[in-house]
Amino acid sequence: MADSVGMLGHTMGGMSSDAAVSSVWPVLHYDDTERALRFLVDVLGFAPVVAARDEHGGVVHAELRWPGGGALVFGSTRHTDSVHGVMRAGTSAVYVVSDDVDAVHRRVVAAGGEVLEPPHETRFGSGAAAFVCTVRDPEHNLWTFGTYRGPSPE
Image (cartoon, rainbow, N blue to C red; front, side):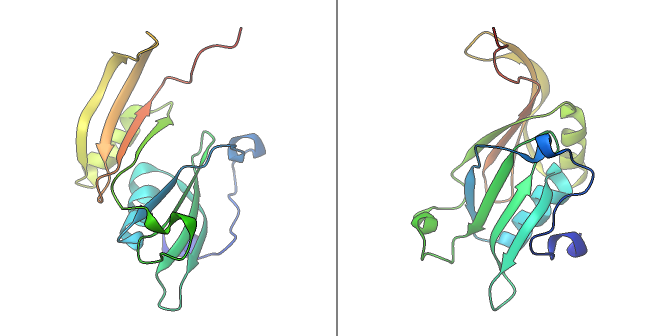
């Protein structure tokens, strides 16, 4: 993983341009950005795009993409000089559309990660059915992976 994450400005191969485009980018902050980067990429399955490092080699800004579309930005709680500098670690929850919830679950279990809800059928507030799994990352953010893609366009 070190090779792919260390390349600043690396673009993802094999992903269609439509899948890489997203107009919503959640921003999270972590105390241990190296550990977060490894978990998000190696365990959850995000693809690294940018990993900008400070003079000590620590990740100060990272951009990741989800293979099915979507993007995520995260940074370090040690760097407080931006508008996001007051964000605490472990206070976010993110829903990610996945066609293979079971695969995400297997990777989290294999890595010794924390599963809050194993894969199961559920209904959201809209009444829509979905197959979902919820896990907690090493700094306590919640990640729900599910098959629900939103209401069908009419």
